[in-house]
Amino acid sequence: MTRALNFNAGPAALPEAVLQEAQKHLLNFNGTGMSVMELSHRSKDYDEVHNGARNQLRKLLTIPDDYEILFLQGGASLQFSMIPMNLLTEGKVAHYVLTGSWSEKALKEAKKHGTTSILASTKDENYRSIPSLRVEPFNKNDAYIHITSNNTIYGTEWKSYPDVSVPLIADMSSDILSKKLNVEQFGLIYAGAQKNLGPSGVTVVIMKKDLIQTPAENLPTMLSYETYSKNNSLYNTPPTLAIYLLKLVLDWVEREGGVEAMENRNNEKGKILYNVIDESNGFYSGHATHDSRSNMNVTFTLPSEEKTKEFLSLAKEKGFVGLNGHRSVGGCRASIYNAVPVDHVVQLAEFMKSFQRRL
Image (tube, rainbow, N blue to C red):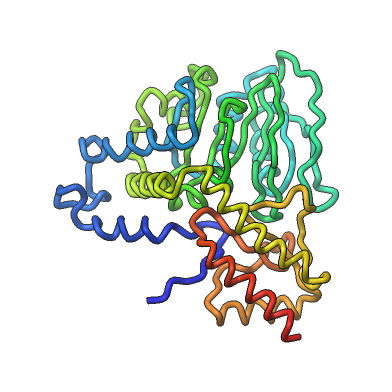
């Protein structure tokens, strides 16, 4: 069969080598005579998968020992609530930087649990850029600052992160492992796996251990970070298949040269598409400002809605998948996460140029 040219925003493309490896062991994992989906999560064979994924992630991102790695469920969306439920205690204030829909949703949930503030926002320009963050002196009543590192809908990405004296929390669902990262800048990082880490079903939380507190009595057990930390994310049955595939993706990243290699490749892919946009004499218009352009989600519009429909229809005929833009922006979006091959991006660039020439 011919593999699709997959530019879906999420769930997104997985490395073909990972899918082949999973397929090879689907019926008989590690000589057990069972699929990994059938193993007990208390078994030695699964234990090697579970801890192997944690150790590989720690190695790839150089995560210090004073940070915990947790595997949770509920996606990044559940973290919108868990974070304030655990960290936004009475008398504290949580600061949010608004750069798109997901940061808006995170703020909406935090407001239900405590006092919040909007530290900065680019909503008035339809989130075309990352704001210049003027960091004021913080005080003992500040719980944390929350950012969304990459904005899938609008195609913007933080290029550097603020150094602040309170915990910096980042939703990195769509750009984790895409570039080098200083984990020690953050108090907590969280990411749904379905874009750069693996399939949907598992959410990774990287959290400074001293932020993990004894929960309030009214906090449900399954919504406390302490529950997962004390039980190695095995308090209840974890999403074993998703964690297994996460481990395979992390192994693939290491074989490909690690996070630095991913960053170089992503820079190359982004440059290919942005060059087409910039050299099209306005036929293609990027949504994001140049200094905020994402290397994960390339968003652009065409001269008219009619041209957009024609572009997307012809692209579908050519085997391209997932190029529709989000309704908030319109136009088109190419999501070029780690697993999207450079060759697929080259093919898309050539299609874009040929589509412009035929008019």
